[in-house]
Every structure is written in structure tokens, then in C-alpha cells.
Length: 332
Ligand code: NAD
Ligand code: DAU
Image (tube, rainbow, N blue to C red; front, side, top):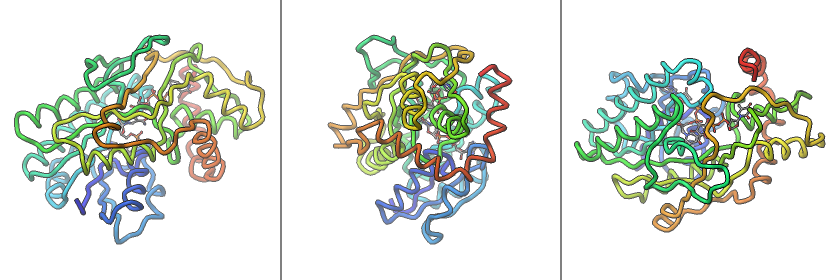
């Protein structure tokens, strides 16, 4: 697999994946990205021109997707609308990109016979009780809560159907919450880091007791590459790094890092339908494919990420006022 097509490769996880591929393989990469508000050309700018190229286009545009897919050995499909809060305000682009976009990719790989890896989320499984011992496994029934997660669940089901009905050569991974460099500041961790850099207060939805299972984006990338190279066609793999934390504790870690009092935050309006807890059991990926995460200490990975946002203020600063104005209008 020397020629990879990476959809959504100018976004947070997609760009981390492209960096990972360039560092760890000899492959060349074409990024297909619509360059929505969530994309960043700068995240790809330091990569070698002779190995990475960018095509600006829509994954739901069959005329663009078809010829591109036919020229590559494999497609890694990250492109999506990814933010739950945005999906509550306007679900329309989520249906268009996450469902129609994935359908368009599937039809192209079906025609060309190209290998596909589809990127998905643990949110397709709904949520878990806060204090329960259960974690999601590949056998957990689908039960999505939000417009975002329901369109991701639908996209997974399309992939499964295209494997079974048409013999498409696809795998799926469902990963937990990612953190790391290049994440848009609308998301929880970079929003709070940049609030504190600005001398402001972190904003916790509701009581702040909701739990997320954090994984560094580079560990997600190594898992995706492993599945692409060694995964069994038609299989789903859950990706997680045993990183469960409640939101309150994450905010306290960030405040502590900057030497601020640990109670220096605001409670704001809760998210409608807010999922309580996600937790991943990644035994299948670890035992079948021998994958292990590199970032096992969340607080250390968080400290590296905080430093990255301190060092890259010029990257996020132009977006900060707009993001905060949108949240303020929602009482968040
Ligand atoms: P992101 O919002 O940072 O990036 C998405 C990228 O997709 C952007 O570059 C955007 O321009 C592009 N895009 C959007 N619509 C497009 C379209 N119609 N055509 C072409 N490109 C388009 O998202 P992310 O957080 O990097 O998530 C990437 C993928 O990983 C998504 O499929 C998401 O569901 C999945 N995922 C995310 C997380 C997480 O914690 N962020 C966890 C598990 C899975
Ligand atoms: O679990 C994987 C999912 O993780 C991905 O599929 C999504 O694309 C990704 O955005 C993420 O979804 P979440 O909704 O969990 O992430 P978000 O960063 O929006 O919020 C994380 C938690 O923090 C959630 O419980 C809501 C809360 N939150 C969020 C923001 C933006 C706050 O308390 N305050 C905030 O300001």
C-alpha cells in the first residue's frame, strides 16, 4: 500500500495520521479535504511536497472521488463533521458529509476494488453509567444519542453492508476521545487550555462529572496504520488507551499545570442529551494485532499538548473570538 488517499487529512486526527505515515512508512499520501472551518493547511505544511499532496474537494462529490480512489492503493476515510455541539445546532452538514460522503466513498472503492479503512467513533454505542464496570466492546449494540453520532453509526452500517453485499475490502475502527496537537479549539481540551492561556476560566458543562476515555492522536494513528496493514477484512476494531477521566478532573489538571487554583472554573449550560460516560475495551486490537499505545500517562500527554498550544498561539488565536462568541450565545 504505497499510495494512500486520506480523506479529511487536513483536520485534527487526519493530519496527525499523515504525519505518522510519513514518519513510519515509505508511502505517498494524497489528502482529499473540503477545507471546512475545522481544517488547517498549516498542519500539512511542514511535510515533504514529494510525498504529500492536497486535493481540495468534497467526499460527497462522486466526480472528484471516483478518479482519485482509482489512482490509489488504499483509502483511509477520516472526513466528517465531528463536533456534537454543532450537530445540535444544525444537523444538515452531518447528514450530508458523514452519510452521503461515506456512501460516495463506498461506491468508488466498490468500482475500483480499492482497500478502505473507515474511521469511526465509540459514540456509536451510546453511553455507559458513570459507576458501572462495563466498557464498550466490538459486540456492544449500536445506540447513538446525537445527530453527530447517529450519522457516524449510519456510516458504519453502510460500510458493513458494502462489505457483505458487494465484497468491498474494508475495515472499521471506533476510537475514543482524542487529544493532541492541531485539535480545533471548539473541542473540550484545547478550549480550556486556550481559556487559561488568555487568563479566563475553563467552562464545564453541567456538573462536569461526564467521563471520556482519552487517547493521544498519535496512538490513534498507530492503531489505524496497524489495522490498515494487518487487520482482517470486514472486521471492526475498537481503539482506546485506558484513559478514563471525568471532565472536572481534566480541568483541574489544566489549572494545576498553569499554577492556578483548582476551583477557578465556571459551570455552564449542559449539552442536550449529553452522553454520561465512554470507555473502550481494546483487547481485540491488542491481542489480535499486537498494538499498544505509546502515551500511557494521560497527565504527561496533556502537559505536552498544553505546551503545544502555548507554542502555537498564532495558529489558534484567529479562531478564539468566534468560537467563544458561539458558545456564549448558547450559555456555554
Ligand atoms: P475534524 O473536524 O478536526 O476534521 C475533519 C476534517 O474533515 C476537516 O479537515 C474537514 O475540512 C474535513 N471535511 C469535512 N467535511 C468534508 C467533506 N464533505 N469533504 C472532504 N473533507 C471534509 O475532525 P477529527 O476530530 O479530526 O475527526 C476525524 C475523524 O475521526 C471523524 O470521522 C471523526 O468522526 C473520527 N473520530 C474523532 C474522534 C475525536 O476525538 N476527535 C474520536 C474518534 C473518531
Ligand atoms: O468519543 C469520541 C468523540 O469524542 C468523537 O467522535 C468526536 O468527534 C469528538 O468531538 C469527541 O466528542 P465529545 O462530545 O466527547 O468531545 P468534546 O470535546 O466536544 O467534549 C468532551 C467532553 O467535555 C464532553 O463531556 C462535553 C464536555 N465539554 C465540552 C466543551 C466544549 C465541557 O464540559 N465544556 C466544553 O467547553
